[in-house]
Amino acid sequence: METLWFETALLPGGWARLVRIGHADGRIVSVEAGAPVQAGDERGGIAVPGLANVHSHAFQRGMAGLAETRGPAGDDFWTWRATMYRFVDRLNPDDVRAIAALAYAEMLESGFTRVGEFHYLHHDLDGGAYADPAELAGAIAAAAGAVGIGLTLLPVFYAQGGFGGAPPAPEQRRFINSPDSFARLVEASRRAVRALPDARVGVAPHSLRAVTLEQLALIAPMAGGGPIHIHIAEQAREVEDCLAWCGLRPVEWLFEHAPVDASWCLVHATNMTTAETDRLAASRAVAGLCPITEANLGDGVFPAPRYLASGGAFGIGSDSNVLIDAAEELRTLEYGQRLAGQSRNVLASEAHPSVGGALFSDAHSGGAQALGVEPLGLEPGGPADIVCLDSGHPSLAGRRGDALLDGWIFAARGGAVESVWRQGRKVVVGGRHIDRDAIAEAYRRALSRLLGV
Image (tube, rainbow, N blue to C red):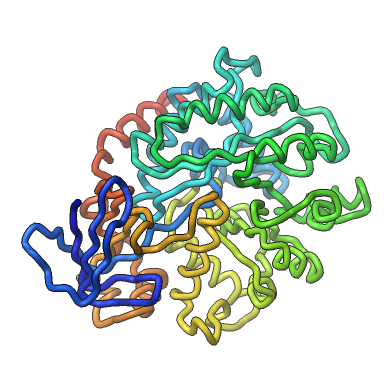
């Protein structure tokens, strides 16, 4: 057993001072508050449990910043998607692994210790199947294993090009599966992650644009008790197209046709009516919110105040990975609500008057649920997934309790995360992943080839 000693730590029962944490075999064995430091203890400042990143498309880290040039007729999600299609056309398995490795290292550096990879790139450049259906899923698993992040792999089923079974476009050829070929992909994906110590596999019907009712009924059971994720109601045009197709809005349609429960994560759900918001909250499903990407794409603002008042659960994700920063996701979530409602401290509550404390607590529990793991914190039996904030950081000076989370999320900029342990292995030291230089060099080589530089 190894022991860590922290000046203060966020435990399930609240903040505690002088905390010794013993860990072995990737799990926390003991937690002792009010404990003097002992010889052999590794010392740290402020310990909090790692966060779950509920929604990532790792390969899109490689196109971050490439879609920020104005087009001739205005830009929105759909013009961004055209840029993404051009980029994805070039990726081989080595590229996917190199790009994912950098994305996952940056997640760890910011305080994420597990990622839900919404993985929809399955086939070769021409759309033909690889000999191993999980060739590219294996590249994702290899990147996660090498970098050290926890992985919930979500193979994506994508069969249609639009609502009502429209044929897919040529640029979607690398995503497309039948239910039978997808079943083989899911089994191959389970084999691909077998070497990872605590990996999970679920399924992800991409969206109502990409999946018919009959296909959804076949795909969801393939999760085998694991999580089920779906993009839904992200853009206003998506809602309009769904209404034109069936007379129902996307979230409304889903609840009428699928047994949505606590195993589901509805990603984005940005454009909902009050009735849909209440129904999602009551379902016990998790809303997968990606505020930085939703702002970058101009999707809109999630109706968080009503959703949380109705008891809804949420997790946060980095989605397009245009900027990977756990604190920034939480800050952008709150600031979007402030702009929309022209108010302050919107997502705090009487139970959690600190905005940072409320956001962190909800994102921690909802994120774990969405990725199919127990929402355990720094407690015996929990994972030794520990984020250590730098107690000497100026934005954390003179603060105690939840004020530390407020300082980190709203004031610290970079540099607040000093160290990260993932399953007891120290993977971030001094704010940098232990293999950052090699990971970044492999990424640069891949991007130079892909972009022709």
